[in-house]
Amino acid sequence: MNNNMTFSDFALSTHVLEAIDRKGFEKPTDIQALTIPMMLDNDANLIAQAQTGTGKTAAFGLPLIEKIDPSTRSVQALILVPTRELAIQVADEIDSLKGEKDLKIVPIYGGQSIETQLRKLKQGIHIVVGTPGRVIDHINRKTLKLDRIEQLILDEADEMLNMGFIEDMEEIMRHTNPDKRTLLFSATIPPRIKDLARKYMDGYEMITAKKEQLMPSLTEQIFYEVRVSEKFRALCRIIDFEDHFYGLIFCKTRKDAASLAEDLLERGYSAEAIHGEISQGQRERSLNRFKSRKVNILVATDVAARGIDVNDISHVINYALPQDPESYVHRIGRTGRAGKQGVAVTFVTPGETRKFQFIQQIAGRKIMKARLPRAQDIINAKRNKISEQLKNISEGKIDKHYLEWAQELLKDNDPAEVLAAVLQFSFQKELNPKNFADVADPDRPRTKSKKNGNARLFIALGRTDQLTPKKLVKLITSKSDIKARQISDVKVKDNFSFITVPFDRAMKIISSFKDNGSRSLVTFAKD
Image 1 (cartoon, rainbow, N blue to C red):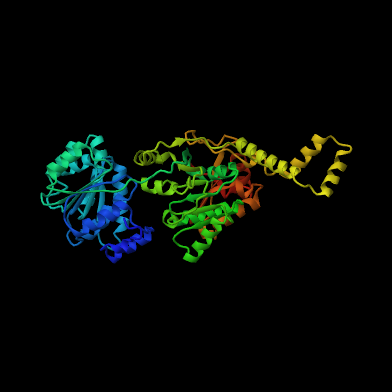
Image 2: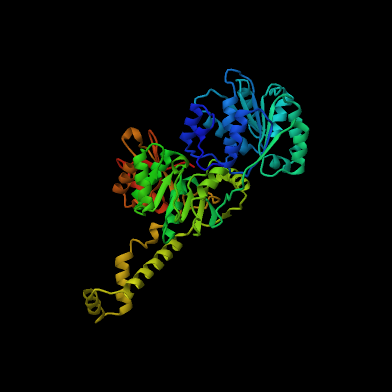
């Protein structure tokens, strides 16, 4: 493949190129460079062999968008996939690439309401992305007619074979337009897939994309199960535990990225955000500050992070679960470079377990569950760091004024007691256990009686009261003895807000906001 090739080298329409640019795609992958021109230039059947995570969806999705006639309200393309998660992912990806073109795309899969799918299919759908079982269900109900489709795409064909869908695939193909074009995408081409192609594809061309190293071999991959309300506290725990944290943190939306960076700054961390709403000049300044280590934390969205090339990143943190396995691979590929070890961390909330299992399966790597550092772990790490710093100072040249001062203090006092007093004076706040309330186990039922846990509080004030997250934190700290770093997961709505605080501070905050000594503007949030 020509390394200088861009998407503009293909015969793609302006609105599609604009959609590609908005998503941040710069150069086509190997499978895209091979597939897109072939699908655009002729009507030959095609078998394409390429690994998962190499951009196959865009490879067939982009030319498919160009070939669909939006004025014809009938199913013109069927994409078969092995799982419901992949059906949703493929439909979302193609929808994001269609630009201004008026295309209707719907995923259909088992586990979703059949009535919902029937209602959507009646609206005039152009592209159906479905799992074999549910597609056959609709064929039998006569709610999905495939006799006029022009494109049939079998995605992850070998995976459908492994899952026992080969007979379903054959059944579906018997109901399709015999003059359609068939495109089969698969990571491997076992004999049964070749038999299927010979039987149902009247001749085909074969392309094979070069194998790529998808997973960085030097990247340790772990995940933590955390509640949504505990994410920020868990992130701070990870940063505090590391000696030299230098990381890239991924959020789902530009708003989330900006908010998280602001929260980190408020708690004393050095952080900046890059997302779609900042100017190119500001993006470059933020990247330069990160590359030069003037800031050690960069918060980003997937689109904004494209093109970041920094070899020394110690951590990539998926603060929000990536949308698909390809995004996961791209994210974690930014650490573990140039022969250096890196760590990829993913936060998984209780409702995301199934999606995360799918990401692991398609990415082809078992990601290990880990335990977050506890409060005492953080304190021990800080103590070790302080001890190392003191040792380095003592081994160097010490100012004679401090030596004279030390000798004076030691004349009539016990050396251990003097040193303990100095340490207490210097590090009491930094090593105070009350500043490190433990993150709650997501499998443990929430209760307001856990003294060392956290409490979610409801505040009867919001945007209409001129509140922002920053102003709310300032308001809370001004009316109670809580520190800003102890407040996490701040959410400000129109008429109310939420915060998470250590339980032993919750009642004091509620009391400090009592209105005329009776009703408080702050209460425990309902679970």
